[in-house]
Amino acid sequence: MSAPAGRDDDLGEPAGPGDAVGRSPGTGAPVLVTGLPRSGTSWTGKMLAAGGDLVYVNEPLNPRHPPGRSPGVLRAHVTHRFQYICDDNTADWLPAFRDTVALRYRFLAELAANRSAYSLARMARYGTTFTLGRLRGRRALLDDPFAVLSAGWFAARLGCKVIALTRDPVAFVASWQRLGWTVYFHELLEQPLLVRDHPELLRLRALVGSQDRIAKAAALWRATQSILERTTGILLVSYEELACAPVAGFRRLYEYAGLTWSPAAERRITRACTAPAASDGGFAWSGLSRTAFRPMDSRRALDAAARGLTAAEVSRVRVLTT
Image (cartoon, rainbow, N blue to C red; front, side, top):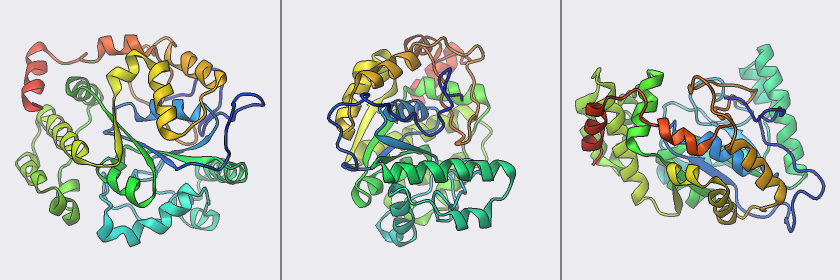
């Protein structure tokens, strides 16, 4: 999804002179915005970056390249979607993520792995942005739905301010249906530490190989919601509530994350959240960082949230996720 009109802003628009009042450069924790894909993480991340305090880092745990599998950004080997990180495997992840949130870009590691023209352009953009962000005392913002099952680890071990987006299950399932997406539960069940800590996931075995995409998406929503509700040290945020009142909602998130709320940030958020909705309402990667954000009228977008599901399917999703 594209950045707001008139901007080439994959990694966050730098604030100009006088944009922010009372900022303390270099202070505060890194920020993680997570939640299941299609729960508004890219939108939320971009709005948090609009204040100029943060460097936007898109989906380092995505197993697909791009946006993931970029060792310059995260020098660790991602093996599964929804990679589970906990104290038992922290040695595999903590050094890499410490580099990421410190905005230390690993140029040689990136060159060894990715040398296409696109990858080189992306390396130049990320490398420059990391370096300038570090020199200017900015903090890292990780926008990563694939970190959703590890949110507690990011809060406890990396000290992240974690914002976890939750979306109404009907809207979530409808979005996945429109895109033709499905979930492969073996990606979860093949992670022994995840199953050990959340044995209720074993119930998902009954849906392995199923072609019932509605049932699978609903099961993923229910399992993830249950895990997030038990996770300490994170802030659960309703996508619907944020979309209904974006300026007030994001102002609260700025306060939670220790970010500077400024007139410029409010203008950028207002502009991005009142733009006409895209005609197709679909999903597209865009920009060098491969974000899925595009400006929208956030209130009106809620009206079409269940588009593509029949009344019977809506009722079924409600039953499956209760």
